[in-house]
Length: 456
Image 1 (cartoon, rainbow, N blue to C red):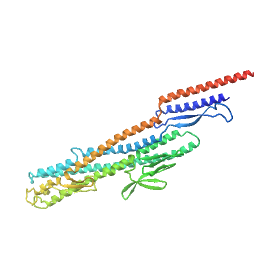
Image 2: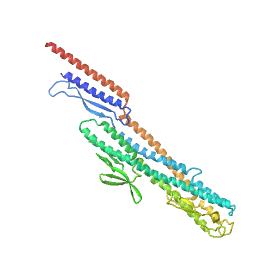
Image 3: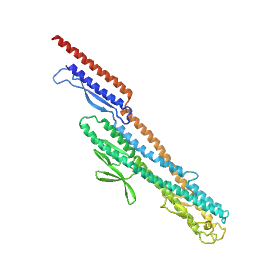
């Protein structure tokens, strides 16, 4: 009866293969699905017998996955996540600071233009009022732009906080899938669907932080940050949170009762991109705006204090600088009037000696932490230029990252995605295999009946 057993094993193998093909076709549009196959192996003949063999058996179920291509997919998602989160902030900041009518340069230029215009007639009340109006307008522009930076700081922090719950949930789910995969594979059940789900979660985590993944022999996947701190090991998952101590917020990773302080500018992904933008672009920009306002206010006030009003009394400060206020960084001193403008250098009405020195302040140097020593009149232009360069570089890198991500997805699909044309061919081949084996069984039955008739 070897012929019947052989044909039966072939029919069963073909049926198993057809089941796999049908699963692939059914999931041809399922995101993240990895195509499967069967490995057919010939069954050797029994010891001591002279026969062709005992048919065919399913050696194993195949899962067409390339770990290298998966790693490339996750790395590309980390880079894309970091750059894509930053660009909206850069674009907003560049637009605000480079606007012709609302930039710091526009306000500073108008203030010094008003001072210069007052030199025509230092005693003219309308010209003096124009100086105060221009100073107030300049102050409001400083306050408006500084407020935008302060709002972005809050927005970035809120966005970072919003990422953490989903990130922690994904890590916990990966750990749970690790445990489930070990248990199911031990019972001999196919774990491909569970692995697909786990890899999709890893891809999601990779968009939020940069990760390294190691596939272990027991079927589990170990996930860690690029700096080495563990995120998932077997069925144990880490959690991340921002811990505030003495007013400073620090990203902290907790794993197995151990705590690790992280530099959120270096964790990669969306979280790292936001942290890097806040620490290396936004806060330095905010500090530069404050430094310009503070040093200009000090220079203007010192020069006004060195002059004299129309009545011969000593001059008073025009500007008030408050670095602790996001909405009142710079403003006109309370009660300051046109008669308080100390344009005279010797107390003589109509003298403009001190006014000329005030006009010259625009060409004096100031020191910025981010740029070094620059002229007051050029400071904003250089800041906006640096911001524009940062924005253009990020846009260029974002385009590259998008292309790399697309290529990584295509590479992954070339190995793991379902090709319906290929599955259609497999469907026909295994159908023919099944029908051929059924014909062999029919022939064997005919031969068996003939044999029985011989002895009938």
